[in-house]
Image (cartoon, rainbow over the protein chains, first blue to last red):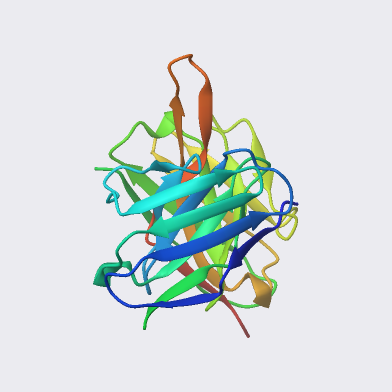
Length: 106
Length: 127
């Protein structure tokens, strides 16, 4: 099983600042990596697939990068609606999720 | 508009059974692989099972293999998860999700991510 490790577990950021979230795979997943956003009481929402392609309707302030085992989700200027938990997921070999990074207001 | 609506969750005793449903609308259901993903209270997301577009192929996480059965009725645009021999550790919100895909300019298939999710249904296993 491919293990996905996200860091940090919690990220405290002020509105308007940049947030950088990391995701590492235990073995190469090529570019078969997605990012999801989940708010309390809601279902996850797809943000990024193919490591760097924004899903339909996702604002340009969200960007993804990386390939192989190291990936990054960047939120260029945090808005109030962006405070949430973010999960990475590999779909190169079955499907596994990271444990999540909570982005909270500083 | 793509919609996925789960139902069938509830309280069940250990060893009991439950069948979840996921009603799909707004897209050609029979063209997509579908998945179940669960989330225990306060925990992260865990993939449970998948089924291909015509229902001929299924896969399961080791934790549910032999106890859960995924199926679909393309005529009714509905996905199912039959859960037997339920355990306390199966307590979670269960989401159905559509597997997204696209073809690049060379006709190469890319898929595997989950582009639409239902709102989830809570399953509680407790005596």
